[in-house]
Length: 262
Ligand code: DGL
Image 1 (cartoon, rainbow, N blue to C red):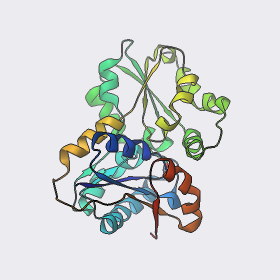
Image 2: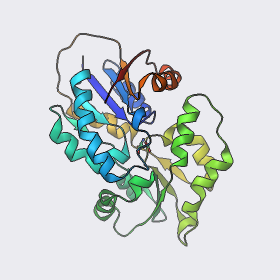
Image 3: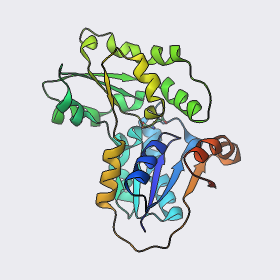
């Protein structure tokens, strides 16, 4: 029995945890939400660089996974190497699905919907150079959709007008109307996929990285014999955050919740 730890700033990584549980039903998939430091998308690079490696090292010490999945584009595109240097287990990151989008676009124009942090990353420039040369890539950074996804997964209504307000500017540049694929480059966004799809012009396809990340975790995880057990969700930020996160965790099958102080 393999034990994985899936980590995100909030509820977004639950979309990756769900994919991993689907692909590896016999695994124990623990979860960690850094709710005490959420949201990552508007933090400076320095703030995240300072926090992420130490936090991940602490989480690995506590949860003792066989594999750590950074289910967050904002964190992965900045700190994957620093995190790998600090922990002793394989680390799988989540990065924008530019390669499949570039392969599948028919118009040659793709949209990247991400946090403000992810859209300004040099990592994204590299992905574009490597996999999307000759294509037009239009980036749109939004923190509003992250908040909406957090609220939606706790059962609150989302306002379609606000979703449209966040998404539509991606289609404003001269090549915008030719976008045929939008990459959901934030793990929160699949939680409100239908609302995002409704805010895009008809015929636009949305793609994310959930399945690919799950496949990669299965590929790299060492086969360690372990006793069976129930999955645990860890949360930072104390009792108030634990209470706020409980409905979302329960929806995704996490009933044992532990507070981590970092
Ligand atoms: N879920 C995270 C991502 O994939 C970011 C959300 C946040 O801003 O904290 O980028």
